Image (cartoon, rainbow, N blue to C red; front, side, top):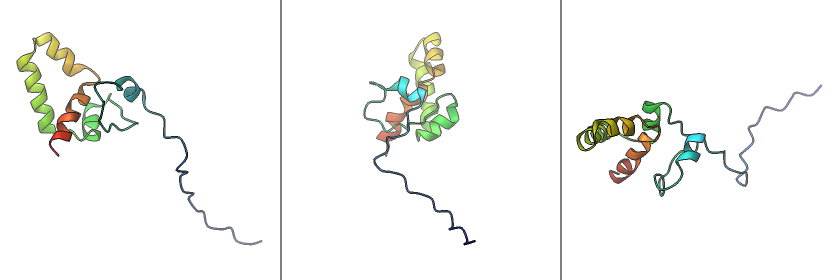
Length: 98
C-alpha cells in the first residue's frame, strides 16, 4: 500500500465571500462606523478585548470616560459609557493619533 501524501493546507479562495459580520458589527454599521476599519468579527460584549481589537489606547479610553463625566449629566454619562457601542467612539480618536 503506498504511503499517504502529506496533508497540505489548501489556500483560501480569493473569490469566496467574506466571513459574515458579527451581530455587533451589523448593528453598528452607519454614521458611527463610516470610514472606519472595524473588524468583522468584533465582539463589543467584552470591553477590554474590544478596545484592544479597535486599537484604542487605555489612556485614550480613560480620557474619553473623564470627558463624558465632565460634560454630560450623570445619568447620560452612565448610559453612554455603559452602552455596548461605547468602544466604537474611541476608534476615530485612535485613527487620528496615527
